[in-house]
Image (cartoon, rainbow, N blue to C red; front, side, top):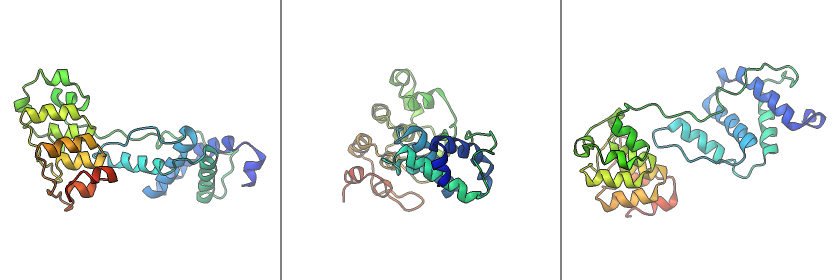
Length: 231
């Protein structure tokens, strides 16, 4: 790391970030996550965003990679990033880089769009007033992308009050999407304790298994959420 002693770490880091996009085409996802996490830690510090929803698996992996660096100093993250670039391209020099920047991997991706209707949008945005104006008895029975119901969406976004309203209007608490996952799977995976409690109190079956033969308790990342389920 002699170059770091010769010039500020931040200057070398910025040069490395500019050079990195020219190297990413051959990198596996795991290695991309290494750089993504250190870039975010170096530029923003500890992870400061909510964990992406159950459907956004790519976003969740990025979030988890960044979160794993909790407490790492910005300087250390920069040094590890610089070392990583040098390992990929030993001939790279910080004074001879391109200017393509970090745009390709600097942000968490947005989830793929669902088939948006006024109902789905209101559920996603936690718009109770809008929902109460709709014919929910009909809407709660509809299926959207990947077999999801409105209750799946409410569980994915963590909107407890919306979920309760949909249940009151006849939503099937045990509806399964195309992957066999119920709203309880979604709520458990995302760590929404209040939603898990609501769904269980409204008759959610915690023994239902998805296509991977996993129950809602088994997909729960959080020990506190897992403890809510009957043994």
